[in-house]
Amino acid sequence: SAVISQKPSRDICQRGTSLTIQCQVDSQVTMMFWYRQQPGQSLTLIATANQGSEATYESGFVIDKFPISRPNLTFSTLTVSNMSPEDSSIYLCSVEDRGGGDTQYFGPGTRLTVL
Amino acid sequence: GIQVEQSPPDLILQEGANSTLRCNFSDSVNNLQWFHQNPWGQLINLFYIPSGTKQNGRLSATTVATERYSLLYISSSQTTDSGVYFCAVADRGSTLGRLYFGRGTQLTVWP
Image 1: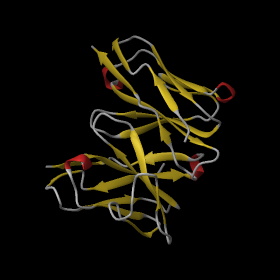
Image 2: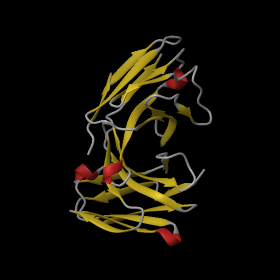
Image 3: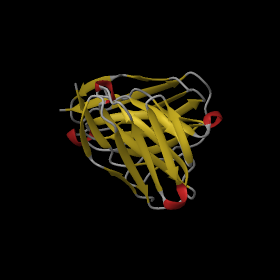
């Protein structure tokens, strides 16, 4: 199974600032996904990031607020821009292990608190 | 998108008890996974099970795709089983790899 790391693991940020979250995978993967988990809630997909193309955003999420980069097959970043307290969540990246039957594996998450 | 409903929302058990968690989904799926989110927020993949039955130690899962439900069985529960259990599915018409998550079952196991 893929091993995924995320940085930072947690952060406390001021309203109006931006935070970039990094996701690193130990193997090359075609698709990477970014999810948000608001406090006490389930996971919601923000966008799908494919290497060499623009990210595909889910309804309710826009590129200006959550710009994503995917410079190679093992790395992606998600930026949370112009943050407000409503952005306080856990942000998780995941990858699909096609060799494991489309199983998705998740990184440890980034716990963001916006004051 | 596809709807995923999990029950019960909360479950409190004494150590050693058995439990069954249920996941109902509203459409045909080509991917169904069970995850355990531990108290630190880490999501751990338990089963990839779009159909059939699998077992891993004290855990087992069964998906009846034709009836659109999946069950997760936990036997001889331990305090380390505490956390939230999520069911997630991908439907055949959705973006490749996109998972829809249920609201989860919060499991608390007391010693």
